Image (cartoon, rainbow, N blue to C red; front, top):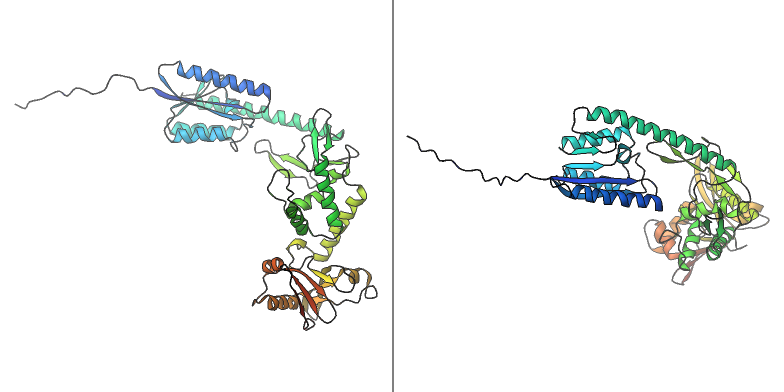
Length: 412
């Protein structure tokens, strides 16, 4: 007869504790909401650790972040990642509105966690995602939460619009030269930054290109407010900013959508409001309009091309009158050409300046030869050549290393 031996179970008899975490969120970054967040964190710390059947798995926090979407919610994203890694069995949260106010995101997340075997408990609504009627209740209540957000958003838009009608900005984005005085509800000049703004406008009006302005600022060690260096696009936007004249253009951008809240440039979809004399100007209106006129002229001359991408911008100087050369487009005999022509001659005719024009493709070939290259390289040219002075019989190259060289076959 076979001998049977019973092997006793090695289980200790101890119940495996559930790993429990909590998620907390406040949507406004104020002292009052910080206190509320601190209270939530303290509550969940004690609540989880006082339950002998639970193992504390952490508190996940998002501060000053909206709940209408999952984007930029770092605490929420980390919570989901740790659930996927098997570090959490139960998630506690105060309410549906703290977890998400977007019904689609809420249900997708809860279903995903349910597939992972992770239970979500909403304390205020007394809903457990693992219960039979849990998802039905979530769908109904989340829809109410989303409708509440949409109503609040409509009320906010109405309040913002009324503020615009009275010349009050809704939010203020940092602008070099100004700081917002929250007590007085107006912009105030920062003197040392205002000097930089005036210098930028003066350089542009004196004939500097945007790239040359950037170079000059770098040479002087001047940096913008929130970056390491200025860029051409930054300078261009500054020159277009009506705020520097002491006036405000309100609703240049608007928030599109309640859930995604995409910031969109206002291209006529909504009214804009021009508020005059709201603060002290840095630039007078005459100088501002002169800048806009120069930018318009450049767009007319160069078409859709960016002035700053052109290889010879501010590099060519007239040997007759000392003015800079500009780019001109010509069509003839079925061919299209670009020429570089003296500003004075272009504006006032040959009687004002008898200088000659240079065809761009031929000028590129001359520069390639002078620099010892088979083909023209814009970056190498702009790095090595400071200036080309145009005379009737020759071109005078001024190099970055101080050398000067005459090219006498330039007319060919």
